[in-house]
Image 1 (tube, rainbow, N blue to C red):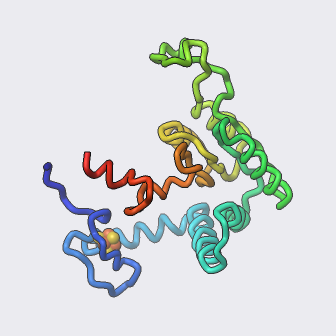
Image 2: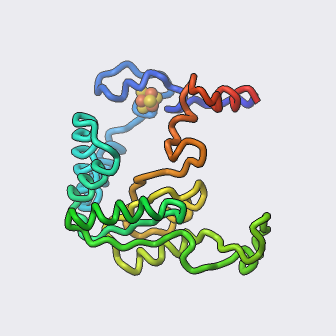
Length: 212
Ligand code: SF4
């Protein structure tokens, strides 16, 4: 096995929740200089960052305390940053859920525009992407075009609904506005991707992957 330099994912203490907590030797907070601290505070204090960090702190806290759904937490967050126009980037397989989110957000006073992953109708054949049983005429998901559509709309906040792994990477890379994830794709678990990460889940996926 390759040796690794431990980082936060190897920690298990997670004492960074306390300012005076005991930390492992490899904790990045140990080497956090006063200068770096000042630079980071200045960055967090920049206008948009400050609004996002303040609103996220509030919506996450309220969400936790009141056991809000992620939809409700997302709306609270969007209201907190003063977003007026929301862009929804959705997978076509979750188009009904995207329409439901749109109805709710419009009712809450937001202007909502959307882009579905197949918009643009670029095919496997167009890009010479090796195609599977779907054939050369099958339409590819087009996350860059989704980002371009929402960029043209000059959205204040983008909300991602169920983009597949990788498509989301391209969308997030090319979107101008801040993005938040309302739903992730999980074909097996009805889009509750955390289930596969839990030891003892009846599917046994985690244990199987660790054994292979
Ligand atoms: S910041 Fe430090 S205490 Fe927190 S998870 Fe990382 S290593 Fe652990």
